[in-house]
Length: 362
Image 1 (cartoon, rainbow, N blue to C red):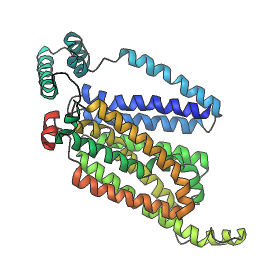
Image 2 (cartoon, one colour; image 1 turned 135 degrees about the vertical axis):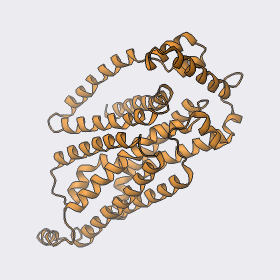
Image 3 (cartoon, one colour; image 1 turned 180 degrees about the vertical axis):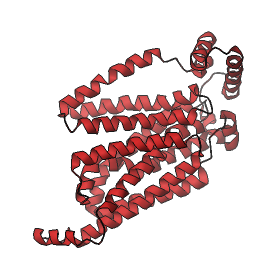
Image 4 (tube, rainbow, N blue to C red; image 1 turned 45 degrees about the horizontal axis):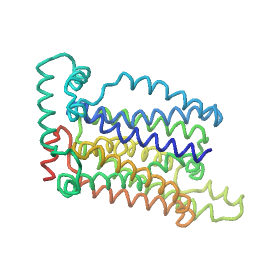
C-alpha cells in the first residue's frame, strides 16, 4: 500500500510539475515570467512547512487525510483557470484563445490584438506543416542545446543533494549534535525553505537569473564543505570512541561551536531552495522552444524524478562507505561543478522573448 501510494503520488506530481512550468511561461508576460515561476517552489515550500508542522501533532493516516483534503481546493481552482492562449491558438481555436487572453490581461482591445498577432507569428515561425516533432527537429542547435543545458541543470540540482538535506534533516541535525529537538528542527527547515522563496520572489525581478543561479550553487558548495568539516571532527574525535562516557567528554571538548552545523544546514537550504530550486523550473521552460517545450519538459521532469530517487536511495550507502563528511564533501564538489557549468553554459533569459532565446542558440 505504501509503495502503491508513493507511485501514484509521484505520477501525479510529475504530471503537475511537467505542465505547470510550461503553463506559467505561456500565460505570463515577459516581465512576470520570473515572479510567477517562483511560485512553483514557493508553494512547494508552503506544503513542506505545513506537513512538517502537522507531523508534530498528527499520525500517519491523519496526515494522509489532510493531504487528500488539500486536493479539493486545487481541483476547484483549476475549473476557473483558463486554458493556455498559446496552446488554443496552435489548435486554431482562435475565439477561445482570445477569451482566455482577455481573462488574463483585461479588456484592452489594442493590447489584446497586438499580443494575439505576436503569438500567431511565433507559432508560424516554430510550426511545421504536420505540426509533428521529427528527429530532424531535435538535430537543430536551437532545440538540442537548450534541452541538454536544461537536463544538466536538473542533474546538478539533484546531485547537489538539496532534497536529501530536506528528507533527512532530522537525523542530520541529531548526528551533528546541534542540540535541536527533531520536530522543532523539521519545522525550522520548513520556515527557512519558505523564507528563501519569499526572498527569491523579491530578488527575481531585480537581479539576473544567472547571478542568482551561480550564487545559489556556489553558496551550497561552501556550506557543504563547512558541514563536512564539522562531521569530520565529530567522526574522528567523537564517534570512533567506543566508550560512551569518553564520547560525552570528547563532545564537550569539540573545537567548533554547535551553531556552525546548524547555520551551514539552514544557509545551504536557504540558498539552494531560493536560487536553483526556485529558478530552475522557470529557466528550463524559458530555454526550450515552444515547438518541443511540452515534450522536452516532460522528459526533463521524468529525469529529475529518477535522479531524485537515485540520490535519495544512495545517501545512506554513501554515508556508510565514505562517512557523513565524505558524503557532504562529495555533494559540495558537485555544487562547484554546477557553478562552473552555470557560468559558462547557461544563458541569461530574463526579459528575453522566445525568439531572442532561440536566436541565441542558433
